[in-house]
Structure formats: C-alpha cells, structure tokens
Length: 204
Image (cartoon, rainbow, N blue to C red; front, side):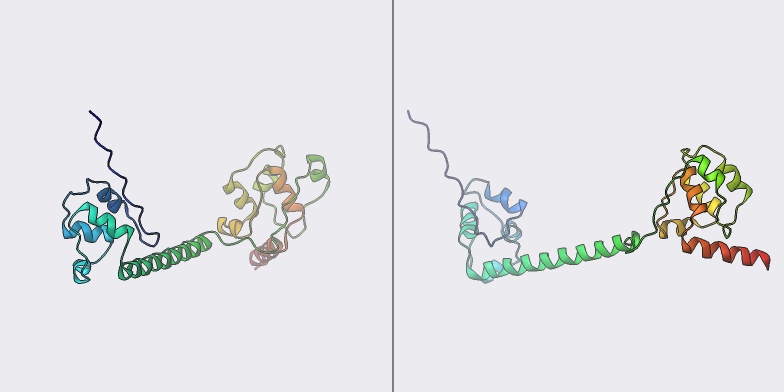
C-alpha cells in the first residue's frame, strides 16, 4: 500500500504583500480549516469589513493562500500604501533618535583641544606652570605624585577649578598626574581665560 501523497506547499505570496507572523501562522494550517472574518482581516492587515465590501470571499486557509499568491489590484494598492506608511514612520523615528543622540552627545568640534602630552617628572619640576594658572595647595600635592598615577574625574575638575560639565564640553583628556601637569604648563586658551577671570574675581 503506497503512502498518501504529501500535501503540496502553499504558493509563495505576492512580493508586494506584507506577510505578518499572524498571516504565516494561519497559512500553515490545513487548507480546509475554516477562518473567521476577523482572522482573515488581521492576516490581510485590512480594516474590518474591507475585503467583504470589495467582493473578496475567504472562508478557509486555502482561499487565504490564494489571496496572498494572486491578490487583486486593490489589495496590492492597500499594502503598498501600508508599506510606505511604515517606511515614513521608521524614518521619522530614526530622525528623532538621531536628534536625541546628538543632544545627549554633541559632535566633537572641528578643532578639538589638543590632548596634553605627558611630561616626565624631571621636566615638570624644572619648568614652572603657566603664570596665569591658579595653583592651589591641592594641585601642589597632586603634582608631587608619580606621573603615571591615574586620577579620578572629581580630582581633575577640583584641581583645575572647573565644573564637570565644562570638562565634558571641552573634551578634556586628562587621566593621570602627568596629563594634569602638562595641562598646567601648556593650558588651552579657554582654561587660561577661566583662570584669569577667577583671579580677577578673587582680587575684587
């Protein structure tokens, strides 16, 4: 006795039709299984009653497969419009995400401040810091430490007498005592201006 013939695979859907996971699940069921109008509407991604008003009769899985494989022109138009709507929504969300990312992480300026080059301890001790830089006792103690010793962000901002937000905005690359020493010897213009203002305020 020969085995019963295996069921033929469902025809592929038309390339312009959007096939959701719900539609795939329904199409994989036995061909003669009955479907409700709600199931068909969700599978075709149509508003309730749309396909009936258009004269499309789908009562089971086999007829649903046929509708996906050979859709009428109005159904292809509906799915083209749906695809365009989703693409526009995706583009809008991507633009909003890019704007949020830009606001959270501003782009690096065209001419960022050069990273201070670490100096060895002998060089730093022989050269005085820039005369307009304010040197506190905290800084003096820090600069006596080994130049490869890492520093916490809070130590760096307190030594430079700047806010953390300023450090982030100016893209400071100070990680060690050596970096800090180099910054006090060759400070960028914005840091010099800040220390000049601080000195003037304290004089007043």
